[in-house]
Image 1: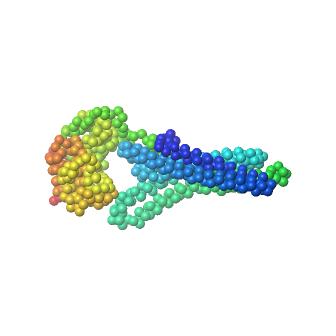
Image 2 (image 1 turned 90 degrees about the vertical axis):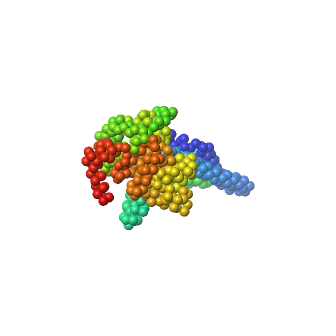
Image 3 (image 1 turned 30 degrees about the vertical axis):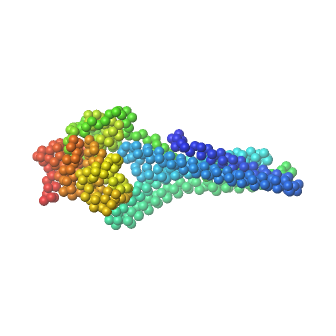
Length: 575
């Protein structure tokens, strides 16, 4: 686990080392101060030597001030190192997630990845800051104070031989039982974050259906589940502090009792006993610090494991063996006996034995009922998912032979869920081509029937869309996404039910513009309305993950019962 996280310290290793070194200096100074106090009592006060008392007192003050300065420096170095470590880790994790295929994201879920990028990394950051300070300070203080205590009186120091093992066994017993409980708690966090994310995205739907109270109740239930999991985990850890303090007080009583007898017998000086009690406090406080650190590490271990799980995840789609010099020559597509399953299970196929050839520049329509795997079929073309068996060819080459960037730069895809980002309309459109001129942007928007409504806004193309494009309607959002796809000037463009929110007249205008603008570009249109695909070169009818039929509109109306029934029902709706 540490091997995976250690590289993210790059650039902050020096700060980490300095944080530990300065805290060591702080501890050594603190440990020496009680020894000076013993001299003041045993020599200065016993002999009435005021000069000695003043000299040792000033030395104690100087060492205390220096110890304070070292502590402040250590805190600063630790903050810099932990914040930098968290920054690198967050950036590395985000970059890793960006490289995931759809299958990898499906495995973790969006909410879980958000929790890992936020809560889990914050837990690791806080623990790292404690590691470079507390986890260094406590053992050094424990060892140094024990050495000084033995130096004062070895017989009295045997008290620690009983206290330390008892506390250690207790902490190990707690930690081994608490870890799985904290891991379960973090999974509850994932569920709560998933609900928050869902509700915030769909807040307008919630309000439209007046479901605020229902969603409040659901969230309360999720929060209650987190609370219960946290209480279950913390129930073990609450024993940590009282048991540590109980052992501390027992040691104090034992030392005072034994030390008192030694002073009476003349085997120990009063100043030595006072210093010894200070060392007891230092030793047992260091043990308590270790126990607190232990608690934090139990929680962090669960968070770190979740982070490392993402970092160690093998990407389902790689292009390591692809030919970097290979570019997509044209938009021809071929499916050769393709089988596909989201679970990679041959007994649970989403697509079954698909064979299909699409010529360069063809316009292909795809029709089928919900769950017929239309979207699954086209997502294999830009390699958003990989086939289970068979092969998908683009431009005469298996898609796995291309570098992913080269392949996807040649394929524009407008997904069912139209996604826009915070920023202006122009910023969003330039996702298609960051160097596109204003004239090219306007031409793409005219083709997507978007120019008129954009210029109707007071700020035109500089209109801020808000998060997720909340400032435009569903139909406007679809047209902006089509324009963005057109700016890529692709060899293949896939419209996955991307005109469902526009009226039939606008749909027809978009299709007419696409035919004129995309000469030589292979166009695949998935639609629910047959009018959206009836003028395509060929139409594919899909059913239950298989190709039911392929033909022109007239041929399918003539021979395919499923197609004819859908067409006639839609025509009656129009009439």
